[in-house]
Every structure is written in structure tokens, then in C-alpha cells.
Image 1 (cartoon, one colour):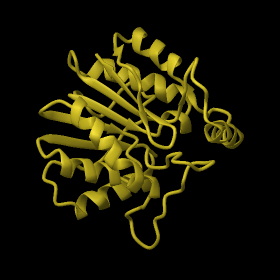
Image 2 (cartoon, helix red, strand yellow; image 1 turned 90 degrees about the vertical axis):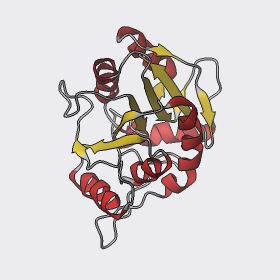
Image 3 (cartoon, rainbow, N blue to C red; image 1 turned 120 degrees about the vertical axis):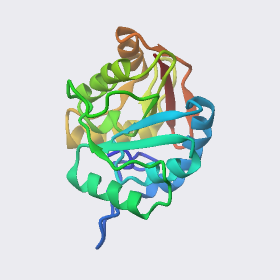
Image 4 (cartoon, rainbow, N blue to C red; image 1 turned 45 degrees about the horizontal axis):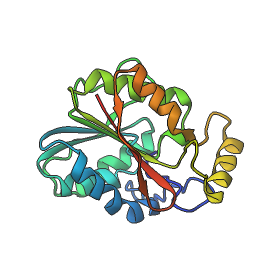
Length: 216
């Protein structure tokens, strides 16, 4: 679900699947380079990066091509998303892109036992709070000491004015599903503390988004 991001709209952008398995989420074309620029300074030099909620799989295919020294493991819960991720993987020439696995962030057990870094794009606001709670619990379980948990999306911060477009987006999300909505950075920081992770300063991104970088 990650590729269905805000990116200046009033609701998650739908996947466009057309007549093939590969979906297309327009937001990925706009945000991938900005995200990659931050990842270059954050991700480990080697090892496995687990991407939670990979959505169409476009981010996974793109980032795997940019970081050939890292094994990229995409995941999602949705069957159509998993098919799209697999199709993007088959079309990719990246040797380091693994087939997707079905992973529910809120589950007590994940199908991956270890990761050197975890990336989650545009999931927290379009999933129940339990998914974000599980994300931090899983990160504490899988990551080595110093391993990064990188979260991207629109958030609300105390003492920082929320953009009008984000407020409208939040209302739209809650109208669609009361379990959804923009999360407060302070709430995620509390989850980090509960799970033994430390937080870095949020990194401002285009279209009123943030990169939140936590480390175990």
C-alpha cells in the first residue's frame, strides 16, 4: 500500500493496474528520488533492507537498482499488490531484488527473521494504528544495534503548523475509515522509546511529507 501516497492530493492515489499485473502509482515517480537521497545517508553499506507495505512494487524495483550492494526484500498484505510487486521484480534486471513476501505489520510473527534496515513508505496513515505499533515491535525484533527504521509520509508535529492540504487529507482519510488518519510524530517517538529505538530529527520532504529515521 506504500505507493498510494498523499503527494498533494486529498486522498490516497489508487493503483492503476490496467491490463497487466504491474500497477502504477503516480506518487512514486515524484517522491522516489527525494527518498533515495535520504536513504543514501541512512542505509547500511550492506545487508538486507526489508520494505514494509511495498504497494505496487515500483519503489522496491527502483531502490534495488540504486543500491546493488543491498538485498531488497519487498512485502505487503494485499494479494493484488503482491502480484504487482512480483511483476515489477520480474521486469527488473536487479539481481538483489527478492520476491515479495506476505507480511502483516501488526502480526506477532513476520516471515522475515532479520533485517539490517527497514523502510516503510506511506503506510501509517492508511492503516490501523496497530500496524504502526507492530512496525516498531518488529523493528526492535529484527534490526541489529544501530539498524535504521525509516518511515516516510505525512505527519502532524506539535509546535509545527500543519499544512491545510494535510488537514484536508486527514479529514478525507478518517471519513473513509475511522481507523486511518495522519499520525503524530510524538506518538511514533513514544513507540520508539517503548521498543528501545532512538529517534533522529525528522527530515522535511516535498509535498508536506517527512522522513522519520529511528535506530535500534
